[in-house]
Length: 171
Image 1 (cartoon, rainbow, N blue to C red):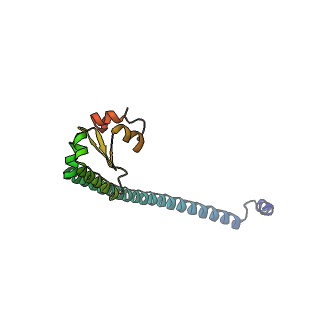
Image 2 (cartoon, one colour; image 1 turned 90 degrees about the vertical axis):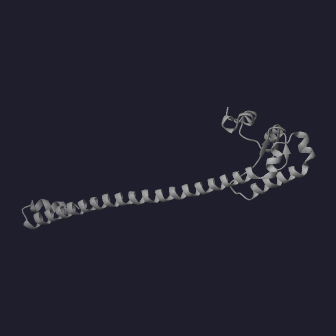
Image 3 (cartoon, rainbow, N blue to C red; image 1 turned 60 degrees about the horizontal axis):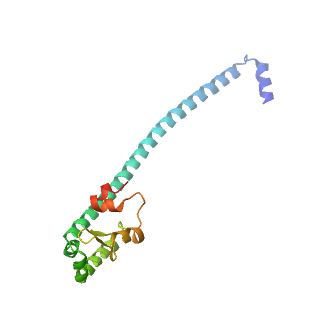
């Protein structure tokens, strides 16, 4: 390196070869830098377009899956609402629930089959307001069910939810 600097000083840019060589090197460096900058700009722009396109496709696929799952759950809710055994036990009081144990077993079996056949449901339960009991895997009192069987978050006021509906359950 030192030798190169001394050689350049010796010629003091009086040599035509050195002048043309340095000018050509400078022009080549400018051309390569400019073409690299332009190529990097267009490459980055294309990569961002491709990334946006892939993200849009991924979001649309996820949206389709969520819509399909919601449609299945809505269909299941309609089927459950039309189920005769659930409709019968929904209006039993405590005495009727004890006397009509066959219908209770049918309702419990139906709820269990709904839970087993649907991967999106962790638990299915039915609150019977007249008899003040919950049907899930069995028949429970609400206090026992929510304290021992199915512990929900502490922020959920179960009594408030059962009286006013799920949107009023959070404290």
